[in-house]
Length: 71
Image 1: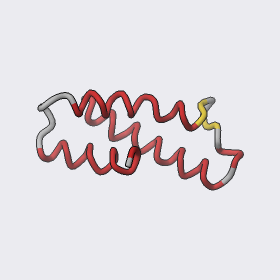
Image 2 (image 1 turned 30 degrees about the vertical axis):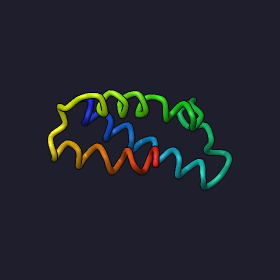
Image 3 (image 1 turned 180 degrees about the horizontal axis):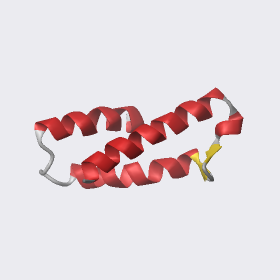
């Protein structure tokens, strides 16, 4: 479930980052600044990195989004 949540929240965070880059009026979305938006996917990414549970298919959902988020 963490994997699917990471994928969804990560995509939302990427969208927020793209909005913030398009103009300063989007620096705060839904009451959260961009840095706050990264907090939750960062925690989930760390948790996923500490477990052997993700299958190859799961890693396909997780790692590309993580790479786009965290480089």
